Length: 287
Image 1 (cartoon, rainbow, N blue to C red):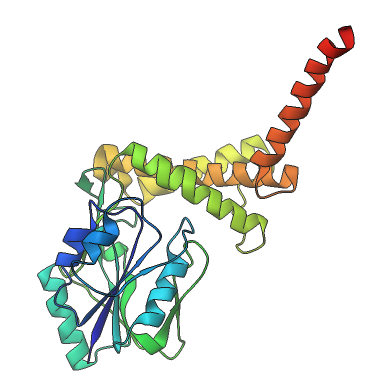
Image 2 (tube, rainbow, N blue to C red; image 1 turned 180 degrees about the vertical axis):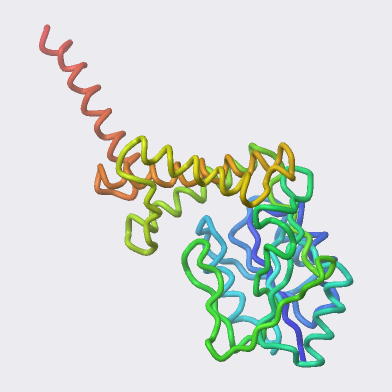
């Protein structure tokens, strides 16, 4: 039984080598790159001749499906470029495969956020399980952001219960990285998907007090109920940023609805140009 490893990349030259080093044991490695501007592709080609290019979408889900269609193995391991596979996880995957313990395997994630590992708020290894190891015939990937895996109803699932037999995930490096990638990039994609009817809307409320209450409750749930306070400063930051993320998506949707466009910047710039022209016309009319 062959194992195919799928990795999607976009400007991951700082991560991709260690990621690939940790999966050299696989029978096949497939890298789908979304036209990186750095040295990602050249590094990947040192490890596999199966490197493909896919249009840049701003999120990885369609590239994952493209990679899955290229896989020849019966078993597939989906890995992000900012993750590595420890030896203990590799050994567990072989055991699961040899004993046929399931069709779709949920793998723990040891998540690092801005330099430290996080253990609460759903970020702990056993609170953040994802179906990353599976028989190819049982899984497809969605084409919308954060839609992730589509699993066949008749698939047998199995969850790894050892945190050490899980991915190491080095997510956001610093606050600039989070703001650029998530707070700006992902929120725009989420808002467009809601505006275009591809995703349901996260209703915060129809008045400022209601919105503030909903956000405060979300922060309380993350920081207090889900014990974010145990992760110290980073726990506070994650609880706060998660709710700011929701608010930014909401604000972007409202602006799109106001201008009836998923690209309101274009409409606003046109408005500004009209205002400028009218002001400058006053000079023309004075002559």
